[in-house]
Image: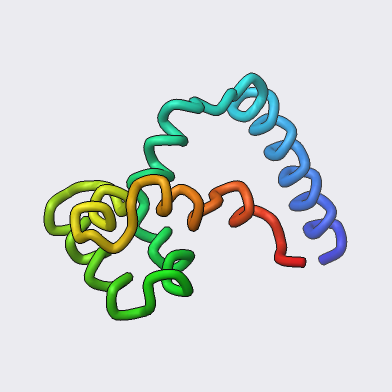
Length: 100
């Protein structure tokens, strides 16, 4: 049984090395695509809830989804915030770090 476990661990280690060499090495992020995906994400509405309130945030998310527009555009269209207020309220960089 121990021999089989050791053999399996060796195969797993070899697979991880091969994956790293042939699949992961050299991958670079596509900044334009990543920025677009973040801007189109309706999940950002969670961060706006303290600013807009739950009900208005939900309306904005539903509007963005129905019209296939960004959450930013939906909030502006609905008159909840200006584009500048939206940008100030939603600091994307801060969302990627733990709160103090």
